[in-house]
Figure 1 (cartoon, helix red, strand yellow):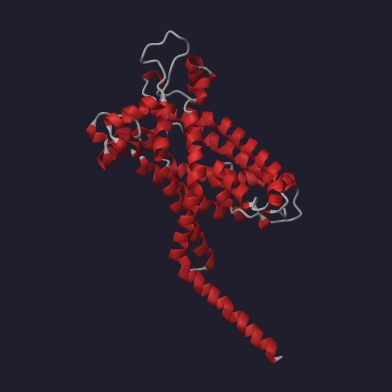
Figure 2 (tube, one colour; figure 1 turned 60 degrees about the vertical axis):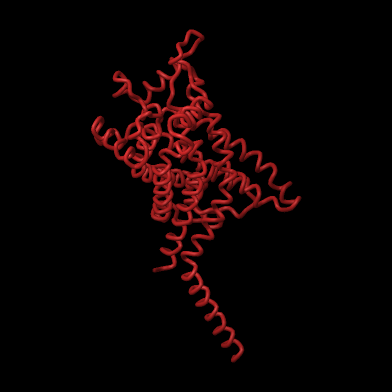
Length: 360
C-alpha cells in the first residue's frame, strides 16, 4: 500500500472513530433537537392543548415514561452510520477533487482562487450528501415518539425503512433533499469566506500548500464551536500568543454565531418536510413549507429547538478534544507499524548519507 493511500485510510479511520464517540455522547441532545424541530404550533393565545408547543421537559418526561433511559439513544445507530459514512466520503471526495480544482498556482489572483475553492466545497459537500441523505430521513422518522413496542431496537428500524418504502417509494428517502442541498451550498459559501478570512487576517503563511488544516477537516469541522475552541487553545499557550489571538478569536466567534443563525432554519424546514404527515402537504415545495411555518408560527418557528442546538454545541466543545485524542491513538495503533517501517527506512537512508560524507 502506497504512502498516500495509507495516509488517506488513516485519516478516514480517525475521522470515523471521532464521529462515533461524538454521536454516541450527544445522542440525547440530537434526538431532543429532532423532536423540538418537528413539532408545529400556532401563534396567538387562543391555542388548544394540541396546538401548544411542547418544551424540552415534556419530551424528556415522555421518553423516560414510554421508552426508559435508553430511549434517548433511539436512532443513534443510524446517526452514527450516517455521520461516519459522511466523514469517510467527505475525506475521499476531498482527496479526489482537490487536484482537479486547486493546482497550487501561486500566481493566480485571490478572486479566482476563492471561486475555485467555492466550487470544490460545493462538489465535495453535494457528493457526500447524495449518498448519505437517505440515512438522515430514516434517522428522523425512527426517532419520533411511539408507544408501539415493535418500534424499538433493530426490528423497529427495519419496519421504519419498510414503511417509508411502502408509503412513498424511493422518493421518500430523499424527502426534503432540496432544502439540505441549499444548506450545503450555503455552507460551502461560508467555508469559502472562512478561507478568505484566514488568508487576509492570519499571521500564518498564506496559500493552500502552507495551510495547517486538511481540506476534509475544514469541510467537516470549520465553523463549529469545537474547532473554534481548539484553535484558540492551540494558539494561546503564552500571554503573548493570547494577545495576538484575541482579535482573531472575537472575529471567529462572530463568524460562527452568524453562520449558525443563518443556516439553522434549513434544518428546521428539512425536519418538517421529512416528518410531515398532512395529506395536503405531501407534494408541497420547500417554499410552501416556509410560508406555512411563517404563517402559523411566525419567524420564531424557524428557530424551533435553537436552545437545544446551543446545548449540543457546548457538548461538542466538551467531547471533541477527548474524541480527537482517542481517535488519534486508535489510528496510530492500527497503522503504526507501517509508519514505523517508513521512519526506519528514512533513518537508514540518513545514516548511509552520513557515512558517504565521512568517507569523502
